[in-house]
Image 1: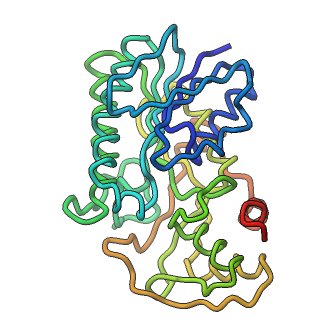
Image 2: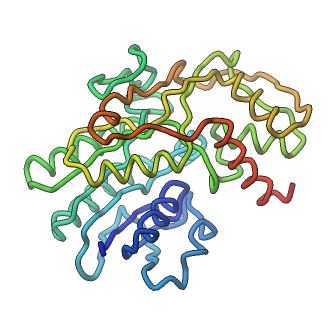
Length: 312
């Protein structure tokens, strides 16, 4: 039985990680301040003897009683609408929050995993993106607060590994979707589903030719768990390399929902990446991991969850 701290544990990914460890019989301490997370995501875990919740801002001093085996730092706004609305908080949780959680990992002699992102590659000039690519990021652009916060978090994680000997892992997460995403998340799939189910026009930015590679949450969580249990200290991409244009993705969502929602086009946001596809060669080789849930199956599960919450 391991004892695990998950920061941002009431968020979309954090709550699924809580489920993963609880399902394995581990003791989970979930830490969140509900800036973007929700108590609804972890409500089913309250009352479980192996689950504990701490309401706390990880940019402040962190106190956790007792031993810890693992710390997974997932606290951060992760949607463009969040980090554009909360730029200072995004920078602070990536810098100060990472510093505080790494300090805790050092004190507890715990293995540490940081949730990094494909955004560290920026608007990439190499396709697909391998972990060896250093990226094409605009540090003073609107998205820079998130991109650079995560790049700094990776650098600090490696500094603690090299200087203090902390046992660290870095996962670069590519676009992920599934149940518990916020209805007003602002990212493509929640937007498409929410708009189509609500009888609105479905908004596609630019001409819709920009691509993403979307991974169902269960696949991602399994990849993260395997990385945590591996010996790899350098970054590993986790994502589904099945690439699709945003226009085709919108059409797929509308088709599965089965209505006649109209697609409308709006201007492309500043610094929005034109392509995004993970090179998962490293994850395949080291973790023996591949995404296994197809997009149609994943979208059907996600749409069912949105229907339930929207009462549609």
